[in-house]
Length: 92
Image (cartoon, rainbow, N blue to C red; front, side):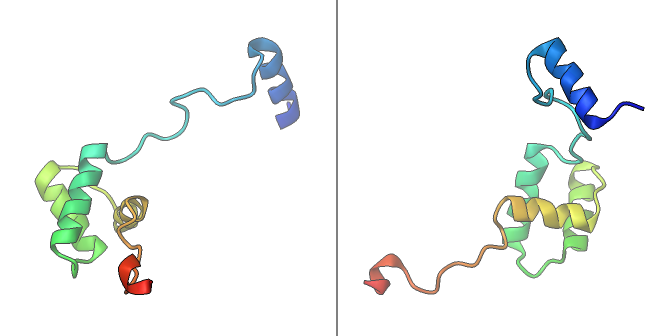
């Protein structure tokens, strides 16, 4: 059974690199457009749960995703970041 190091060494000998090829791994469940849509509907309805947003996305696009995926996408767009209570002018 080949080890990870053997596989990496063979890949390096064949290609001269050990970088991953683009397109490897599981494809994303949502497109960039759907991610933007999630961000928009989340901002419009701040009180909506991830489950509600998941249902809204399904109704609008037909793409079925879990509440965990919705939460991850909103984290990626920095939706959950806290805004500072003071502006830069107020801090000075």
